[in-house]
Image 1 (cartoon, helix red, strand yellow):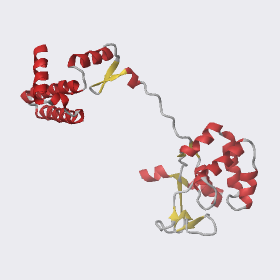
Image 2 (image 1 turned 30 degrees about the vertical axis):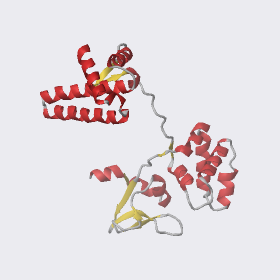
Image 3 (image 1 turned 90 degrees about the vertical axis):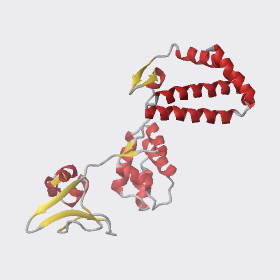
Image 4 (image 1 turned 180 degrees about the horizontal axis):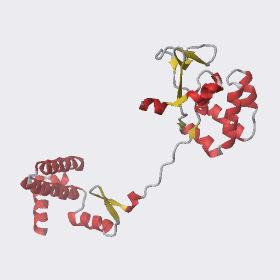
Amino acid sequence: MDELITKVEQWAKDKGLDQADSSKQMLKTIEEIGEVAASLARKDEHGLRDGIGDVVVTLIILAMQNDMDLYECLNQAYNEIKGRTGKMVDGVFVKSSDLKQPDEPKNPIVKPIVAGWIEKSTDNLTKAEKIAYLIKSKDGDSYYLCDWFVRDGILTQEQGEELFAWAERQSYETLLSLYNGYEVEKEPLYTVTLSLDLKYYLVIDEYECDGISPTLTTSSDVLGYRYYLTEKEIKSADNNLWPFAVPVEEVAER
């Protein structure tokens, strides 16, 4: 083995490769690795043996170009792996330090009303300002959400009180983290269908300018009508309609 390495090193010196550009030599190594991969794919044993040899030759030259030798590099690599622990995962050895990656912090989950408040674009408040007002609410200051913004028409009284109550229950860390992102809680949705003289559907006309309020229609597929409603929306139309509500998941399964 020593003799072979010496011959390769001498061959490289004779060609002037020991003084060549290392970045170009690395490209040659990558090229030969590609030949190894191709031989594996073709199950070409002769090509694989030749390819592995070519990779070693390119690495010997790369080491020379950086005033190193193959034994020095192998020795350092072995000293790093000899005490390494881990396990096989899907045919690949994974070291212990990579198996114990800490969980990435998850974005807080917020109610749709909170997301709507932060993302609302019809007022002049910035995202940071809106979060700041939630933090003020955490401090027990209800003036902004339950009074000021209600008088200015930015929030309804009900919305302000719901936002205030939500903010009071959160930690300061959660409220501050909203600026970096959050996930919106998926509120259960329902359909309401009444079979009377005709089949009636409870819908919300999203084109209604005077506010969003549920209404009954005999049309089953109208652009601008929303047929999937929340519990709150259904009960706002009539509490007696709630027993007729069917979860959207059950509707999809039929």
